Length: 213
Image (cartoon, rainbow, N blue to C red; front, side):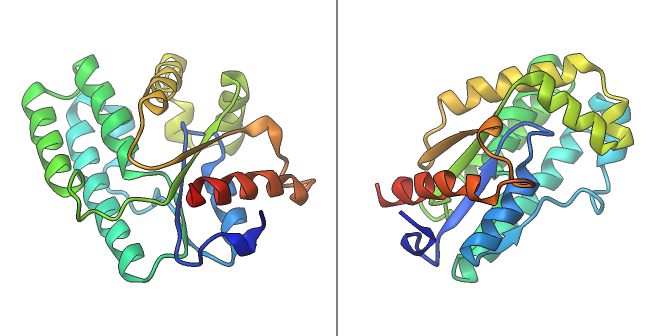
């Protein structure tokens, strides 16, 4: 199984908790496959900085913004004929982030009901273009926390460790029940994109097999 066995119109989504290396893998996969990238916008998000300062005040605004942007991006990818590797899925927004804030009380029950109703109307239909495969990145929590520290985003550095621990657990629970498209699980210790580009080969092989199935 090689890059030539992966359909040129495929849509590959890379998922995983914050700091696990989604953007790096997205770029490298796209480069190897000759695909375009769809990267998560952080700089142009008008709510993100305020959200990290006050979850309760801004969680609903943040999630609605993400939902709209990811829906538009998914539509654009599909209408462009595919051939994309995408950083983070629309499914994580509802399955991880919105649900976590609803469970913790930092999003009101009314806001969460409005959000999930909108998500279901937009995404949970036969017309929504689902990814051909979701690559789920997983790894040791301490390694992931170390990566968050090293990249040095101020709003992340000021976030309590318990938030990252809970998100890590929620991701593991979420992926266990995810069935919107085929899943390829990849441990971040099994490849080294900086020192051994060939370590990406087994991942590409798994992706190709998952799409064929």
